[in-house]
Image 1 (cartoon, rainbow, N blue to C red):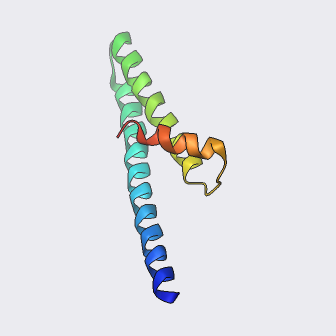
Image 2 (image 1 turned 90 degrees about the vertical axis):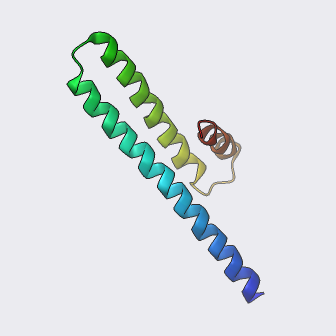
Length: 86
């Protein structure tokens, strides 16, 4: 029983590290796109960067719902949607 518990705990820790790594990358993407918006000189560039920023922020929100630990139907949908862009 203890060995099984330890392996499950290690698996959860690894999954948490992967989720955290992806979330940090998405957060950095949001910051980078925001800086690009401020640097942009053309309205078309601003539109493109804002669209990228919104997409990265929404995927970050979906990841938060997916890893919330809730076994609801919305959490299951969020897990699938957050992995779609990978």
